[in-house]
View (cartoon, rainbow, N blue to C red):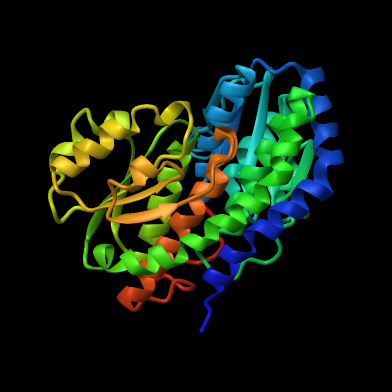
Length: 345
């Protein structure tokens, strides 16, 4: 019987196609507001999967627009009462529900400081949307599974659309329009995920590696393995992993690596070789045949421009989490102790 988590994973190509087609005009209007404001830096407030979308934004706006991006510390607002000066910033709140009070507090205070504020949320009537100057609705539809899938990739796509609009060129939009086809092709990794699930189902811990744009993928994949499989999944840049944490590896310590082609993956063969020398089981997400050949679980994806690769690379990771959860006998729709909406202050 198909779970809601699996159904929502499979809905993602269609959700992203509709978002790109429906919201281009709104996004271009928002981009015009950003250009007019000329922000000195960007600050993003988020929690959970939304925080991982914010990690993508750090590379997206840094690489594409040379804009420094920081992640907000909501406790400065809600616990310490010391909000930073952000009047010359672009402040973005990213939240599926738009209901977490601490994320809302960051955006509301920035609006009071006359910063340009934007809400990215699946609920355009939410407190977050009301606190911001502008709202970009994700339009992902209801998400039944506790573990986010389509709302996460909708957040990535919304951020990518903002970047495309800020470039004022047509090519990024053409790449975005082709993206759902690549996401659909990535769903074919389901068979490899099911076949390899046993290698992770008996584990208690796993490392998840990514770099550059896909540093976000490492964090989101680790979160899915924690939520649905109850694994102690720790995300790292593989550059940091080589600086010490790799010492913990052995044959009973699986590693998931997100390494799509691009500037960040030029040294991916080095980390693959280092993992193999330690005998660690490897699940590799890549479009590169040489990297997949080194892996025990080969999660192949189509090639896309690196700036969009996190939307494709996360899909096999979601499928792997689904397969491992089912192999363990867990219900991926209702992880123990979790609710769909979490309100933190």
